Image 1 (spheres, rainbow, N blue to C red):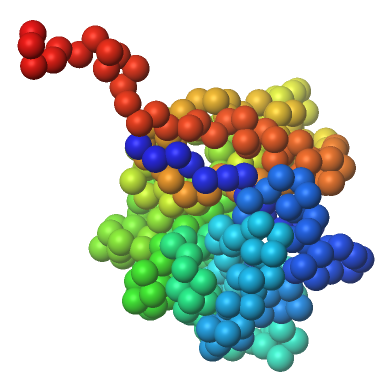
Image 2: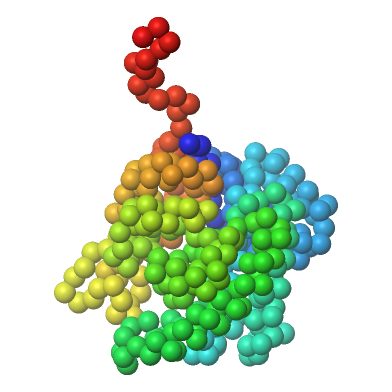
Length: 341
């Protein structure tokens, strides 16, 4: 077994217009001061990290590495959640997601998808240049508008949607395979890949592609009322990235899993800062360690109550406390039989 790496922090929720959150150097100094060892960098902010430049230039990648190294940090992963979303957009969501893309391709699904696909492929090359092994993203969604069985499910519709999803992702996964990097789909409501069953369906259509893997985030599983610990037992071989995010689910007489179109603060299920929710992180870290997960434990901070800076400060120490230093020997070695027994 190997010891998990961490703590890392996903920068997406913290990038802003004011210092120190408007430059990579500023964000790095802020994260390092809170005790983080790595940053997970989204690819949709070119002024923070330009994925196109990174794909083209080893010198640019070396400069980024050096800039972070000056703060004692490394990159855990790059991420393309928004770009991955645009690989597959059902037409009913086209307007809602259009602002994820640059103005030049908005309103044109074919052009928008081609742009997103190219960004994913650039991220594959950039990840390899940076020496990274995993890449978090979203799958996008073609079938999601029909997730609830009313009107009654049309299996042909789902089969066609998943076949198209697999067709769109196969060349992207092949590019990541060429670069030696795992694609890690965050299983997330709103995405066609949102639980184990939907992931398995997708994986089968891709002939068990070796680069089709999972970003494990237990918060989304708790809010779906899944057994997130048994999920690790089933899928540990495909878990290549880990978002440490807390949540709580408190059912009431007015709303449940679907939320009633309410803001997060009023929902039965809501995201919380680490330690403020209901997730059994001792169990999670134990199982991931047992199954030899040696990737990064990365804070994704989202909370409807607590200030983000406070959540980031607490999150660093929370992850540090939960990482299990793996022993190099069995606890009962002292009693093992020797050659003179």
